[in-house]
Image (cartoon, rainbow, N blue to C red; front, top):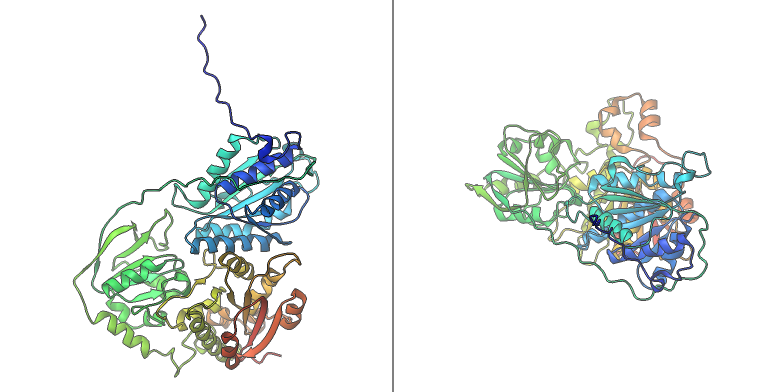
Length: 575
């Protein structure tokens, strides 16, 4: 007898009761199965952008939301939608759930508009699911309307990317692909969470024949239990400091307090609190204290200051980087990465070490005698011809405002903070006084762009279910103002956008570009805009008020409800 060949494994299929009648159109059946598979992998938040090619997903999402499987948020602008989904994912991470939000788009340029949010999610290690509808393969490369090559469009920024051809079977093979996709997004096996992309091709017809009644939510799969590595014993010198960059978490504070080491914590580190945290560590790194540092322990993603960058590039002291992922910060290439150490031990002890830093911090120029504190936009960066008129006064006002907002956020039950890039977050970094508890403070520091800040705040508020204050400069506010645009049938997010208005890109006034000729500086760098924020707020349906810095405390005492813009005018001679 001839040798028998093993039979090919047969995929399991979904019955009609699962996704609707077996006679339903293919695009509807596959969309329903896909949504069911994603919900079973803990998908709970979806941002949907209207279109025709993604309509099968829209119909399925509407039914799934009505059945209580998930929440859907509809947005017009795909760039805004991408950042809102990023904010939703960040909220999940803050709540201890490494679960991506999804953003759904139609085909064509809609997909490309997601790229800024994808790059930020990649650099920040935030899970994010991109579901992009596509034309069937036979329409690729034919110049068919609204058709481009979407396969692999995000390049190396995604942790996983796959295309589902039109007609891809809605059975266990789709379950397997979804499982692989979500595991890559959450870092379930890789410890490297980030964005993932499923490009889903649909052929006509795109409208279901009949309504889908999803029924009870599917059983949620249990994620694999990843065995955490047991790191080596790490010995640090007695005169060490702890640098806590973005998303470092509470571990940085624990280590600094355990050993009495000064804590140099950025505002979005989640660690800027407690008895070891400093205020103006940037300024102190320019004093003789820095010469006495014998070792540096780094957690998170530090990005904010040149003094810290110089510290982390030193070759005469050990730079130890604690990381729980294959990506860690070591720009100069001198750091020693250590995976999740079980124990940090100090070699020797210097009881005066922390006291010296605190004493210097309390007498530093950033206090009342010199409110500017040398931050960007201060007189130290102004050219001798006075071309950055009012910069020093504006910086002092901005620093004072940042300190007030931070203090208000440290109160129990206070709104979460979304801090904009550029000069604003640097004012917080040098003037936010650590309290007993660190506020919930988030910033897009993966690539540190100003785009998408307001939209991320909207997603953060929606995901956390609590108010958020987004503190931004005027250019950041204008860049993403439509992030506040909300459809009439959409949920209301409680987001207050505080605009520290210094009429342009003040960060350049403290950089080497400040010595450019005045007309070049203003036009090519500071770029002040012709914008009336009151009219802008009105057009967006948001509340508006204008105050100076002295009027800010009254604003901060009131609860954040609905969408609003607060313009804080700074001393720049605005007209």
